[in-house]
Image (tube, rainbow, N blue to C red):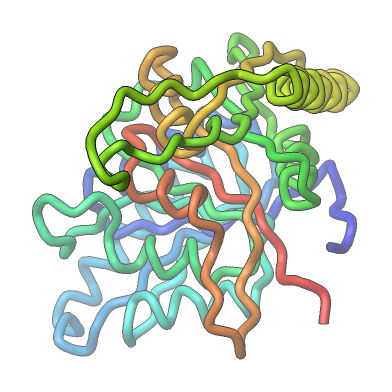
Length: 295
């Protein structure tokens, strides 16, 4: 991934005037980007909505003016066509550093956790995507999830660039794999009491895993500290997505940050299962940091 200029961001903000879009706008305002930061306030609409173009343009202009008053260089962009396709096409041409979008738009089906446009962006966009979920009450606690992969390292570097509010608390979390599951007695010829013995070799392996996991957390904290972002560490064991969401709920995390492998345009491989689960099922906002694989 090409090294970005740390002093300047290009941001693409989705704005369809839904309550989730308003939350995305508020989150953008809480990130203290320097004056002159480029923000494109974007909306695409289906041809069946063409009669409402004037109202949509007015709404985009209002959002742009609101951002200009904070010193940002904001401009509206309204395109006609499939919202998800046009959003991806525009992002591909403009190459923003960050996309910010509400988890659901005006036309999202009641009860779903992520709307169609947000889902397409987190799976196919080639830059970081921040999906904002309601209720949004500010950025007080942010948790970075790491597995030590290059994608996690990209997430560390990207988080280090974000101009967070001064009082924001940062957490770094790593989840160790769950312990082996013993064969249930029902698979035997008759039910028996089954206790998995913890051998010295198994205990040593678990201790080694824990030491390596803690070392990863410590290295990640040190990397954030070097970027001016002090953080606290958390080490858990179990199903990664479940543990992450449980801790996020316990600590009232406002934003989860995770790296994820991007999609090759000609490939059918999707983002990692843990990142996908966090986007779809976590109760807080999620920032997915990824880049396309080389080649």
